[in-house]
Image (cartoon, rainbow, N blue to C red; front, side, top):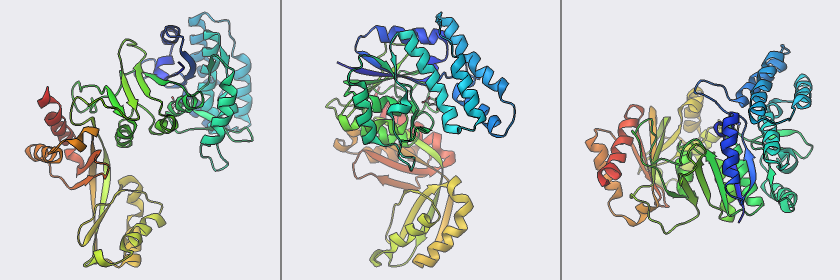
Length: 439
Ligand code: ASP
């Protein structure tokens, strides 16, 4: 068995946390490939090293003195090295970073140093090999992650390596320039490494014991999710559930490798298993609820639109022309609605509306703002009658007006549109009907 273990920033924020991580790794000889994040927050109003690096680099870019900011970053690492009693020195590394900052090596390079340096410390502490992600994780010239080339390079590189530390969050273009993933991207690196070594499991260690059925800021003490499928998770994380980076599913999904979300501070907890498919029924009809505020709906009316070939394409063309992505497009007999992100849309709304008139010649266009979308997700819904009915009666009892309903063709989710101000009440109502009343 081979396991890839990724540790998030809060699991590596101090020497004490590093010790917990080493205990976890030593407790299981199969934990052979380690992917660290940069040091995260040590306490709630602390700053993540990645953010310190961005700020420091911006000073450098503006030609300002960044010596103090860089020294503060170095101090974060020294605190860890000293606390672990290592004899390692990062002096040369910081000299190189200073030089590269002066030469304006770029924001991506700057941010990547957080993981790079933490990887060096982790490898020294564990006594295993350090593999620089810039050598093994590849981006295309356009800046997209190159999955196939990376898989080839990385699997060859790790084939003869019993144990290694590969820093998360970054890779490089073919010419060696560093490029990072989006924030939280070390999760993606862990998944890429798991695919390359054909791991049996990808353990993602963080500061919570897995996924919760609903957001704890809305529901007091929500129940945890034991097992969730990749597809369910994709729906939930797209809608805002944020334990794992949403792109981290793809590499392991190709190989059917399960992900196990675990808590570094409570290693005895089972955590959440993310799997391709399972015969385990979830405890409740629904697996999870997530949602996002801040949508607008653009309602387009035109008599006889259903028989007009190409009408939908023309409408969507107007959004495409102004670089606006759409979320959902429910349609009726003579109406079609396009849900968009309000913040993306607001500056361009009049241009889009006139483009819709120009391209599709509708009877009217009406915009409604301040809407929220809620996804109720569950593999169990397919085989349970009355799920939609229960959702809507719960919402009606909670006095929530439903503005839009969209049941995905996979029958894996039901998306509901409500007013922003009804968001919390709607989630509470759905949670209550499916979880609390079943306890
Ligand atoms: N350190 C990076 C961030 O703060 C990446 C990560 O932690 O996954 O976003």
